[in-house]
Length: 225
Image 1 (spheres, rainbow, N blue to C red):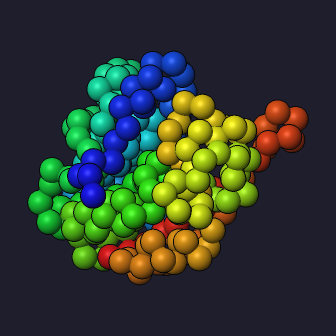
Image 2 (cartoon, helix red, strand yellow):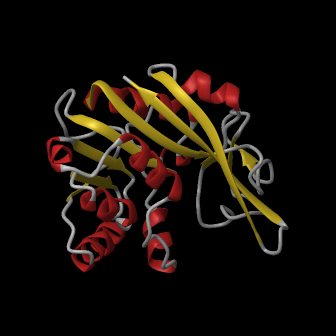
């Protein structure tokens, strides 16, 4: 199996679109519920995989965590650096492929995935999750946000290598055209994919757009090592 997860097409996406300036609402709720803003956060190391343009990193930095962000896109990381400066926030940015993370074992207290893992096949996601597990401390938390099979565009593209819920070249929805490989999930997929962790909580969040004609539904998966 090819030892690579990142698609270079994301550089095109980050050049084309000017989104990614504000943190994900489910992440804000998770942090607010589980971590108080106090001096003790400075002892905690937090990693975001596929950090993109830094929207979640500046927020996490403002919560006083030691913050790290990795992404394969030099375009995204350049934008993240500017956004961090704009918010007077700090984060260590590293250009790398998440299939092999450049950190020692059990290094992070919390790892964040905001719609990064979904852009990999089920088989490759298994490998990436083993790597996430490796760098996560014992009892550390893993917060993951990923598209459900109810999201508009599901089953409108070409099925990828026999995987039931993974597609390329979607014809409809928010992930059509530019986004390459898209892996949607149902609840059964979650239990099979994340079984390397102890799954603490599974929730959903959804929103519509284009006058209710399209739906984005995301799983919130909270796990512990």
